[in-house]
Amino acid sequence: MLEELLIFTRGGLILWSSCRALGGAALKGSPIDALIRSCLLEERSADASFSQDNYALKWTFHNDLGLVFVAVYQRMLHLLYVDDLLAAVRKEFSQIYDPKRKDYHDFTDVFRQLHLEAEARAEIMKKSKQQLITSRPSQNLSNNKTSTKVRGADSTATGGNKKKGASAAKDDSDCADSDKGQENYQPRSALLVKGKENGGPKDNNNGAFDVNKLQKLRNNKKKTVPAEIGTKKNTTKPDTKKKVNRVWDDKPTDNKKLDFTDPADKRGDDEVIDHALVNQGESMMDKDENVSSDSEDEEEEQVQGVPKKKGWFSSMFQSISGNNVLEKSDLQPALKALKDRLMTKNVAEEIAEKLCESVAASLEGKKLGSFTRISSTVQTAMEEALVRILTPRRSIDILRDVQSAKERGRPYVIVFVGVNGVGKSTNLAKVAYWLLQHNLSVTLAACDTFRSGAVEQLRTHARRLKIPIFEKGYEKDPAVVAKEAIQEAARNKSDVVLVDTAGRMQDNEPLMRALSKLINLNNPDLVLFVGEALVGNDAVDQLTKFNQKLADLSSVPTARLIDGILLTKFDTIDDKVGAALSMVYISGAPVMFVGCGQSYTDLKKLNVKSIVKTLLK
Image (cartoon, rainbow, N blue to C red; front, side):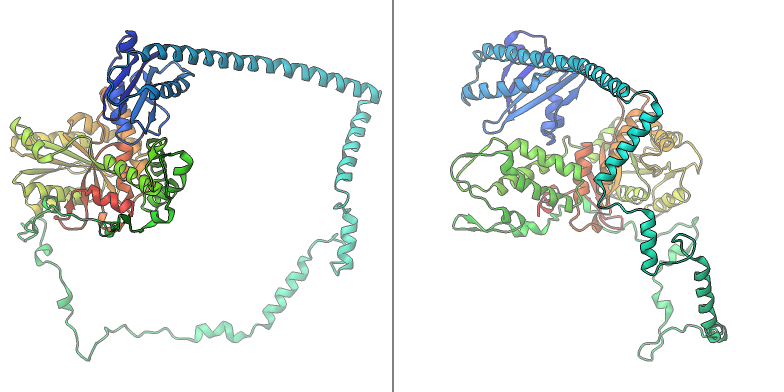
């Protein structure tokens, strides 16, 4: 049973609803709002369907009029007529649609008729399929009976002995096979005789290779080898000359001048290091730096109203005269080139394909004006889609949230998670440095009790930044260590607690269970996934499985998932920025920090416009 069919504009204005028109029951929850947030705004409109709570949703667009048609039905019911009904409603409603009109009560009777016709067609198709399925076994049974009758007639015709009949049948099949391959068939004796005529072996081994002859040849070769070759290496004396430093311009160099090690670093761990590492300058997070790609300087120049042809899209220039309607075949060349371009920028293949399908769904059926390029239309649509994806759905202001937590008398807790070797501890220290510059007190929690040297590494960062660290050593429960660290920070009036966790692969069940316990027990304010900007398709697998494990292993009904992303090693990828797009698309979490160097100041925000222009360059 169809629960609701809703027609609304892309701006969100509801034009007609079957529940309102027919007086049906209201939907439980808000599945259509979830569809808009999760699919339409996130450029996942190319998906076949969407599920929310107990409902399944299907939709279609009229891109030229800017209309969206959504059908909602129970998930357990497999309604075969939904796609057919949506297409019929789309066709009929587009004929009466007027942008100035707001009331469509006359469409109710039309919808009733379309609904009945769609159900009737689906019922006819269902009955025809059932008849086809039931007719197949009877046909197979009749074929088996006729085949057994034929076999019985053949066996009685052969007469008497079954073995003779079997051997005769075998001889007949062999003869048939030999007749088919008579031209290529040669008996084994003929091949042996032919080998002897061609100078092959004439012994009694029927053409086998003579091993004794090969052994004699090897012995003869060993005898001919001169003895000097074997003793030549032993007569040479090893070179006992030591390597001497090279001298340039006859002036000896002082090796001590080449030692740039900070003398303070050579002291013991117990000594307080008083150096200028804390005063490295302002963090890049607070700088309004417009780091853009080269494509910003290569914008199209307007020459007498005609844009200058540049870039890879210009090779697919196509002028369309008149108000032609875009079809999927018209978009395929531009979309294929766009998909290849995204994949060269390190975007996961699955994500690039879904994005192109979503752009095609948003442009199909749209009318173009005179002398409008399909390539530029596709590029503009993709650029808008990428900006919507990379822009956070909800604003996460850490400094504001820290102040609100401080007013409630508790510390703000951030947990850093991720796979091995991505730089969690280093970038945690960068975040701590940025918070210190905003006059916030920070406490580090050493909850990586698994990897050797992890506590010492975090202790070094704490000593350099002159901030407290809470540690319990190794082989302890990280969830308990984090809880005690938060309690200690609350007693000391600390503003922020940064929790360092052990790196773990997404398939490591014990470590993922420990991470889920840490998050559920302490309920942090922010869960940051630290990932490398170097990865491509692996980013999708990492984030998907991290979220899946956190959801499956959660002990509470509403599982806590990843809230934000910290991308590391962003300065090493040049224009291969596709990992940022893949991570945001697959998780829906925004990129909150970008690590771009090895000092504490090398932490900045993600420049969405720069990333989009780099992807489309």
